[in-house]
Image (cartoon, rainbow, N blue to C red; front, side, top):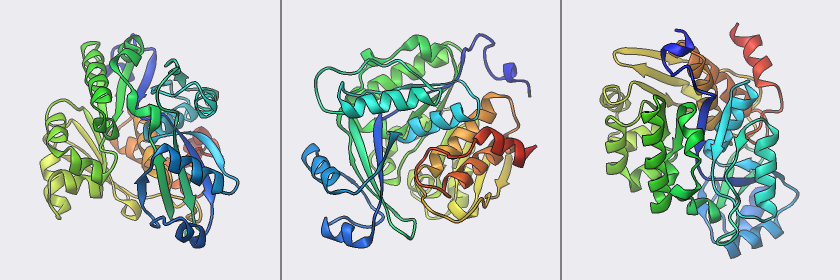
Length: 337
């Protein structure tokens, strides 16, 4: 399918993402550190600013990069050669400067002005133990204060796909921004993609998400836990049957079992790419979405979209963090051509 068969020919951007602007601080540690600080291994806890500062000071050396689910996806798209933009709120502080510089340095467009008041820039402390398990402590800070006034609707109108994360639904102001952006994108002929983000997020906002999925979202991303939660079933076949009639395209990731891509009555079961030893699962779902959306906006088949998503996810779990240390563009050329 030619790229212009899906999207307006005037689009200057492939994908624009709106999400939490978070600085990821990745630290390799051991179980004794987690126990000493009362952290549940493998968990994801929301913490306040005071807790964030205390943990940050107690941590060993870490890798600091721009993060957040959608930001990771936009960076993946940029690394693949796509034209990506990001909208999110940071504060005019040290971590805000790190986020802004880092995401621009990889080629993604980021024009949202830094806030001069309010909460400090969000950060996610990610502790990776030798078994590749990740334990996350997140202070959402300024990212949750994203408002409609922060939106660059000109960027939204210039994109083929607007990609949104379900976490935004936790903030009423961000939710309003989310809706305004989706409406502007659709009016300009673009499509809307949504990531359900997290099983607990689905539990909190099930009715709203069901309303979104039923007619307002073109491309839906979820993992197996999230889609089962959305439809309150333990049977994946039941959930897949229900969601296939709601969105034009659905991509469900299943960890070691690969992924399922669906459109109408068509279904593709995509295998995994084993690119090396499992080190860190941070960003696997984000990079899957990045690979998928890059191929999607280039007019590739949906099977090819799933394969590129799987390849990017397979690479990212072999290293620390959600920034590929090898060229994703060269990786795709080597494994998918």
